Amino acid sequence: FFWKPLLYKRPHRRGERQEAATGSLLVLCESRQAREQEGRMATEVERRVCVTGGSGFIGSWLVSFLLDQGYTVHATVKNLQDERETEHLLALRDAASHLRLFQIDLLDYDSLLAAIRGTEGVFHLASPCIVDRVDDPEGELIEPAVKGTINTLRAAKESGVRRVVVTSSISAIIPSPSWPADVIKNEECWTDVDYCKQNEIWYPASKTLAEKAAWEFAKESGLDVVVINPGTVMGPMKSPTLNASMAMLVRLLQGCSEEYQNFYMGSVHVKDVAAALIILYESTSASGRHLCVESIAHWSDFAAKVAEIYPEYNVPRFAADTQPGLLRAMDPSKKLMDLDFDFIPLERVIEDSVQSLKHLGYIN
Image (cartoon, helix red, strand yellow):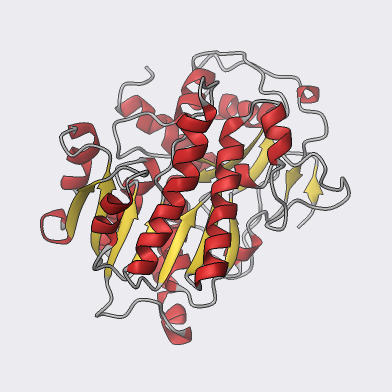
C-alpha cells in the first residue's frame, strides 16, 4: 500500500478469481460460507432492510442484489408518482413480493421512521449530489446531507435496527491539503472542511460533515454504524437518470477538454459498491470506515485509459503535469480486501459504463 506515479492495475492476490465479468458478485457468493462461519449479521428471521435513496444509481443495484439474496426491502424515493424513480425498481425480480416503496423527505423525520420501522438493518444512501456550483450550499447540500443522516440514524435507533451502513464518499477523505505529504491517505484521513468552504467546494464539505455527524450519533447512542467511502462510481445504469459521475464520463467522450485542477479519479464499479455494502452489513468483523475504490489515478491518466479503449471517440489528451503531486495508490481498499473482497478492474468499469451510456442513448 504505497504511492505509485503511474496508472497501476493491482494484480490479483494468490487464490483470487480472475473473472472480471462477474467480479464482486462471484466473490460475494463464494465468501458467503466463510462469513456465515464467523457469524452473520442477518439471520433467516431478520431479512428485512431499508435502503434510503433506493432509486438512485447505487441504490437501485443494491436493491436488486438484496432482492436476489432473499431480503425484503423497504426502498425510499423522493416521489412515488415519478416513474423515473419507481419503474426500474418495480421491474426487478421479486419486487412484487419483496419490495415496498416509501416516499420520504430527508428533512422529515416521520417519513423516514415510517420507511425504517419493522426493518433489521438500514443502508443509508440518500443524500444530495451536486458537484457543480450551487447558489445555496447550506440549503441545497449541507442541511439535507447532515440532517438527513441524523434523521435516518434516529429513526433506526427508535426502530431497534441492528446496524446501519452509511454511504459516505472518498470526498470525506480528500481534499486534505494539511495531511502530511509523506503519509499515505487512508481511512484515517479526513477532508478539510475549512479548506472546502474557502474554495467553495461544497459537496466534499457536505459529505464530511454528514459522516462526522453519523459517527458522533453512533458514539452517543450506541447504534452500530459502519461506513463505506466509495470513489467515483461508474458502470451500467438501472436508473434512467444520469448521475454526476457518469455525466462526467459523457462530457469526456464528447471531447470536453475541461481540466479538473487537483482532481483524480478513485474509480469503482457500481456493482462492487453494492456488493461491498452488503458485505459490510453482514460481516460482524466490519467496523469503521472503508475506502471503496478499484484504482486511483490522475484525471489525465483516466482520460488516457478511456482513449486507449475507445479510440473512435474524440477523447482529449491532458498533460500529466496538470495534476501536480497527485499520485496513484496501490491496494487503496485494503480494509475491504481483508474481508475477501475483490474488485472489477478499471478497464471493465470503463467498458460497462460506455456500453450502458450507448444503450440509454446518452452517447452515439
